[in-house]
Amino acid sequence: MSLLDQMTQLAQQAKAASRELAKLSTDEKNRALLAMADALQASAPALQAANAKDMATGAQMGLSAAMLDRLKLDDKRIAAMAKGLREVAALPDPVGRILDERTRPNGLRLQKIATPIGVVVIIYESRPNVTADAASLCFKTGNATILRGGKEALHSNTVIAETMVAAGRQALAGSSGASPHLFPKHAIQVVPTTDREAIPALLSLTQYVDLCMPRGGEGLIRAVAECSKVPVIKHYKGVCHIFVHAAADLAMAESIVMNAKVQRPAVCNAAETLLVDKAVADKFLPAIAAKLGEKSVELRADAGATALITHYASRITPATEQDWFTEYNDYILNVRVVDGVQAAIAHINHYGSAHSDSIVTGDEAAARRFLAEVDSAAVYWNASTRFTDGGEFGMGAEIGISTDKIGARGPMGLDELCTYKWLGFGSGQVRG
Image (tube, rainbow, N blue to C red; front, top):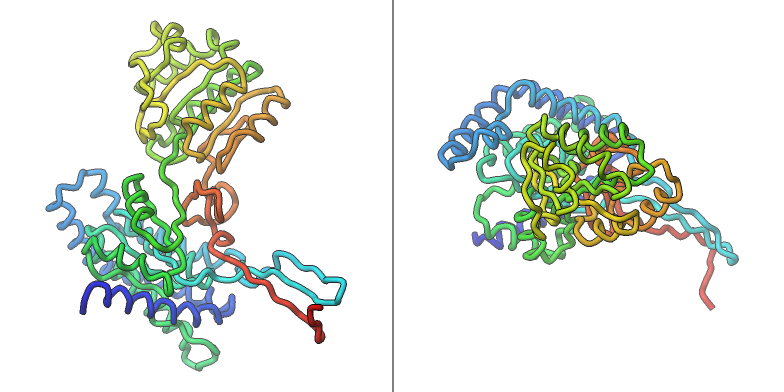
């Protein structure tokens, strides 16, 4: 069987499964999710045996210690996967939710209701726990999932998916046969080959695949977006900003900057650039430079900032033009002095990645202008950019963060894994 034939079979199976998934009740989906959670924990030895093969492959590939740690499935991580599935089961089911309702003058009643998207392909890198997270969120929303992790995690991902499917099928089969619907065998599938050409082949099948969601570095996401013929929800990078305005509470600003940069510098909602209003730069920059120096943060500064922090920063280099566009995911922070809120907005809209940006100020008019004019998925007033997260937004879980403008934007939870359709209820109306 050719690679295209193999991917076509996978996609056809997923499309058929999506039709069956759409019929499941909320109770049926929740019962299956809870059974999956129990099965993952009960199957810990089998998961870890598969993971040991992947760890050996990863070592042979020369993966770093950090990447090997991300790949590893220990008891704690398996328990966390199970906990995540139970949390998804506890979330409200968005499918069937009425989004809009209206009655036309001719008596035709219209409803806009949330429905599953259909077949979702998710492409991601090392962490095998993503397999359970992504599959559970898609399953809760009635979507069939095709998963493609890194080649170093193939054994782990396959066993996780097989364990979830087997548990779901057993839960809905039931000893008494009380459930009116069965769990589709192909609701959760893992691409069975590590061949790189499998992805372009799979993403060419527009008649079966409805959406692709890549999760990982900018290179992976750009490669997927460039080869795909199906819609792709993108999050290229997180170049996030904190702007300290002239009317900022400087103690608050210091706290926010430190949290946004150093709490977890390797995540996409960490700050990469600090903009400081020139009206407070001479007061704020020396103090924050010293604080950042205590955490060994390298500062890449423009001339105005450099003149103010040279004697306070332990690591400072001149910022290049490319630096302003860069997501470091490290203990590195760009610093620029700007002249007022308009200059800050212009900088962010030019250099930012439309992810998350924040203004620190006590001036409501300045804040409102910043909130209205910064063109990003999440814009904050007096808060850290680190809050851009499904859990922090009260979504319970997220499948990723989108910086696209069409469709989902920002943290993507269950609601964002739905599309909608219109239902019309008439009594014989015809259009004149």
